[in-house]
Amino acid sequence: MPAQGTIPEDPGAIAGLLRAIGMDLLILLKIIAVVAAAWLVERIMYLILRRGYAQRKAKGRDEFTQYRFLRNAVRTVVVVAAFFAVVYTIPSLRSFALTLFAGAGLLVAILGFAAQKAFSDIISGIFIVAFKPFRVGDVIQVGQQGLFGVVEDINLRHTTIITFENRRVVIPNAIIGEERIVNSSIREEATCQFVEIPVAVDADLDKAKRIMQEEARAHPSQFDKRTPEEKEAGEPEVAVRVTEIKDGVVMLRAYVWAPDPVTARMMRYDLNETILQRFARERIPVSVPIRHFVQQNPFVVAEAEYADPRS
Picture 1 (spheres, rainbow, N blue to C red):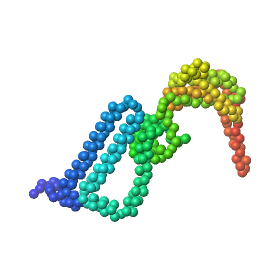
Picture 2: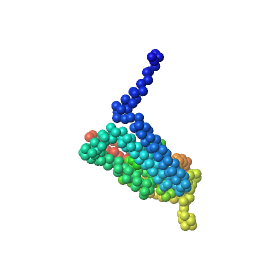
Picture 3: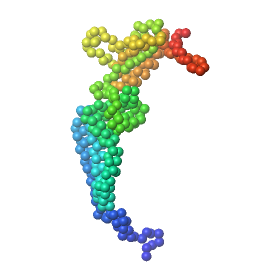
Picture 4: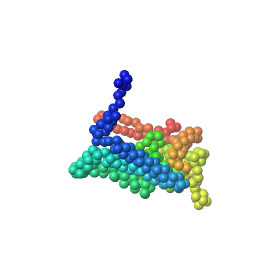
């Protein structure tokens, strides 16, 4: 008689449960073997891909992009193959699946139609890896005024981008493949950054240009991108030009070079501050628009004026 508080052993309980769901111990062992084999194949392919990438790592981002895509593709294929192998191993599930797909042509058509988007993403992902509009690690902008960030990963279904706010944005490959892509890293990362300051029409433009050039050259991230021919011709290291004259505003634009897009953006923020501080010390008037709204029933009329900082 079993001791109080213990569960009596029933050797046939597990076997009865397995038979109830159409399985026996041999089938259970086969399922374990299929899962173990899938895991082993995935590990072997991972080691092969990693070793191949390690041998070609010096070639840069192209090989790394191919490695990440193949790594994700192999993992997906192995998981899907293991799932179907497990279904085929269990007799009840196998007969159910064969009956379902053999007799339900409408269901197959519906599933095929629903899978069109997935296949479209897969084909687009293959095209991205093959034609290389961007690679893992590239700084890109998706759309004319859209997302701006660094490509973190590309797999069969989607591309992951890290924005400069450290947020990950997941975009299906079919969508990103149809968008306009601005790639700041595909050939070289050196970036010409525009630094624009609006000044008043009666400001000393020569003095304002000189101040912008001096502040730009003093920034540690700025570098000289001129060719030997441009240096010989006397082209300035930092060009400053008048790009627009409108409504009492003269827009001055400095063309400043930085080693990469992220550094260029940070440099622009720094130069906006230092140039404005220098303009204040040197009494260069900066034109700031101030908009006044005057309400007249039943309409609202907006009038724009530009304030002179000296007034």
